[in-house]
Image (cartoon, one colour):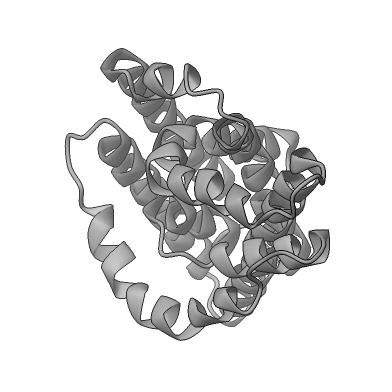
Length: 222
């Protein structure tokens, strides 16, 4: 996987902090009440987010593997997956900018699986040690999220399981700053991330990424 794609994955996650704060920020803030009194808050915050990113990485490995199988069976599969990735990136841009909420339909579709998984998180509360926070984050990493689904379409076209996992790992690391800041109570960051101008800038960057993806795909076919 190229350095550009990995950088794009990180920037996608960083930009997605706009969405993460709104969707997961409350979870990240509320779970602090489950931390044992007198223990380091940052250790549990890092454990929770590590578990969440581990789930993203696992999902990326799975989708990358499935994409590789499909591409080896049908030669036209990879260009098709690339076009799907670009389309989802544009949908994500429209979603973040509040122009069109089409990705919410995919979030609803993922709700069925989430209803099966979510009860497992209750077994991790209250946190007895950081490993409980790690497991809690691993469960919440499967929360239906249009941002994650858009990223997964990229890992689907990554070419193999390792590349898919690396892409989602970088994506997850990109989401770190916003969620950690929220967990630590840095509320001044939230208005910045949710400001309309910032959302539009992020959306524009994602659209540019989508066109670069299409250009590279067309260039590769030639």
